[in-house]
Image (cartoon, rainbow, N blue to C red):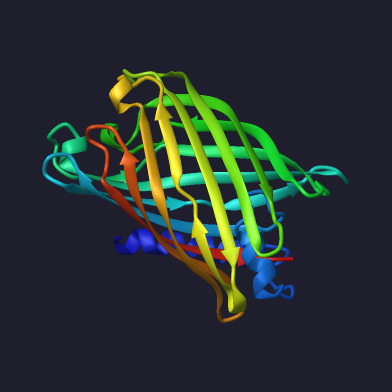
Length: 270
């Protein structure tokens, strides 16, 4: 990560902190913060940096790295409803085997934006649903599809006792663009978290995907695994730190064997 990029990341974090109306309010206890951080439609501003390193790609066992910058900004649209906006901005380092022999290529990938309409008082089952959009922001052809896309996403979860359990589903279809290949991509992320004392928790949140446009043998990626996380503070700012690992039991021919995920999520609770 070069100096210019680090400055941009710090600037984004600073703006979130300064202009958030909740930045200076009293933080909730670590248990409540942990559950809120694990809830994709929580009414809380957050700024996650999720780094995914994928190992064992292709015959040369190459490595891919994807840093997802994922700002979450809830908007109150009525007395009963929130709109939870979630953006995924990937910074990718692509190995030679995935660039068509161009060598390693690094830069910005395609951006995904999701808006979940979620009730403010959902009851025992928390849920959200809304549109998802794919924006062709990649800085190199090897890092994106050069396609516009749209689809739908839904999330359901429950929080019994120390648990946070749920599933997030989405499907995106290409709607235009100059890329050669159309997109029809299904994503399912189930998440199971068990919260311990002092802000610690156990977590499993693999991301299962199906590329419906791929050959039948290359359609699915199915990982299994998990990790551990903790709520802590940097100064007065609460942070959700997490590390986990996932083995791909089913994968395309040039898919990764396993993934190491490290995340820092900056929280701005009410």
